[in-house]
Amino acid sequence: MKAIRKVSTLKTRTARLSPEEIGRTFRERGLKVTPQRTAIYQTLIESPVHPTADHLYTQVKRVYPMLSLNTVYHTLGVLRNAGLTHEVNYWHDRSQFDGNINPHHHLICLGCRMIQDLTDASLDRLTVSSVRRTGFEVTGHQVEFYGYCTRCRRRNPAAKRKRKEWSV
Ligand SMILES: [Zn+2]
Ligand SMILES: [Zn+2]
Image 1 (cartoon, rainbow, N blue to C red):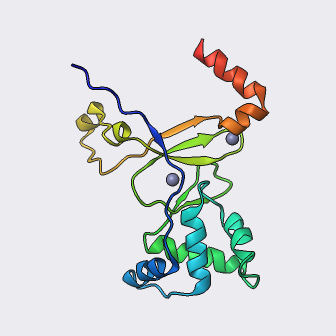
Image 2: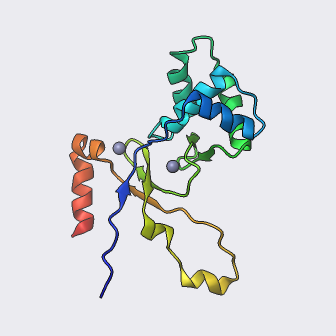
């Protein structure tokens, strides 16, 4: 009997670490714990949109008015070197940051450039037999789906029409 395919689960960010837990994470990686650094990391891991440095700056500045954009860039560099974030750069004109360090896939909106995490066990298990012939050793993979998010489809019927054409 054929196994029923697992339905994809869309996950919004649920990572909610307390400042204490973030402090522990930083210390484990030998990072200095400062309130601003903690706030930047917390905002990053709770954001469902893979924020840019500017986006993080605007958010965290509300709580820490003395924050500078330089501090945000510096902090993101520190977090990246510590393996707590990585850059996603689909658009080449701006870097977005991913605070989700667990394996996952992405839904990328061509309208508003939103990047949403997708976790799907069947994609995690993906194997491509032709790779084996190349002698390349695969240590991981990430699948990207391009299209239009529900908000863009609602706002722009053209995107909807395009989708219809494709599905014919
Ligand atoms: Zn969109
Ligand atoms: Zn992601």
